[in-house]
Image 1 (tube, rainbow, N blue to C red):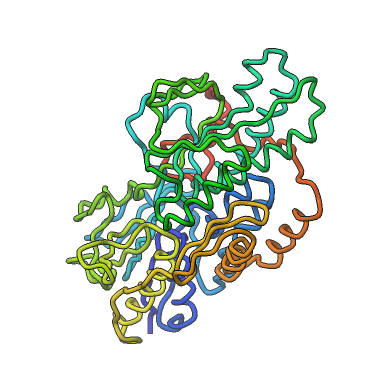
Image 2 (tube, rainbow, N blue to C red):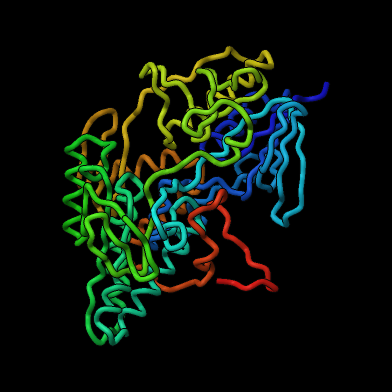
Length: 440
């Protein structure tokens, strides 16, 4: 008897979880094919620690072939889905076209950097959605500080040592908190003729940092950031970005060579090309994660507008926590389609959130209990270790080394600025330039 082919597009939190569960519960009845641009699952919550020199990149990259032994991995980026012919069209890493036929499809293509119509941002800012962007930021911070340490012009020195982060949600707050500690560590290794204090700015249009958390935890994070010298500006955003700095919407111009864009995410552009109903760019699905009119198509994660049964009339937020659990529901309902399980709707109550502020500091509200300081930091790291599907020992070893050894502040030079544009549908891939074409 031939097996049903289940094609999963995207190995983010939802896609990876769906593949893992189907391998465990239904592999005798299904052939799982996973289409993804890379051969790893990225544990995105720890990416700020990669940019800050705490974790090596492979620590947050969990091997797909090593942890999904019964899944066929196809390296490629989906560019079109033919719902009538039940095929997924893609380009492989060498830009060769390919095609996958499916019996059942799970779309979990995730999200990309959210753009706003602000002059200069697309050209001069960098996002924070993939390993290339984290590696670029790590190199860029070191490079700017090394240049600032030996720059004779005081104004140029201050500009190179100024780093602007826009967006005070989870990612932006962690990038600023970790980045401030990293920059101070780098400057301590420099034999500068004149000391320059690195300056980090965190901007958000909201009236406080971490507006998703309760006010007490928001104040805790704000206090930790300011104690580290981070210039926190709420109710503030960027009016224009240039090569020499950023113009704030209150008219102040901040000389800087660094603009990190963490204002949020938007669904992968593939969703809009399907010609199906969407909700704010996310593919409309029912509570069983089924696409209306296509019982063989499921969608989960950031790309899907999933009804929130705990808050009638609303949709689940675009978080890793929801994506991970939606992957499990998608896998179960695919099994139900094949008569192997009972169909169930997606329903999940938030278990709380955790923010790593670097060092021993953190802010967390597990099960609604507000925690701050070293206890929250320990809970946050414990939560990440428990949630990671691999590399736990290696991550723990890096944390231990970071506690007893100084960080290595060197440029690897692996990712150039033009390789990680803000406006990209593939933040997990560095743009490759051909030798016969001019490079920025």
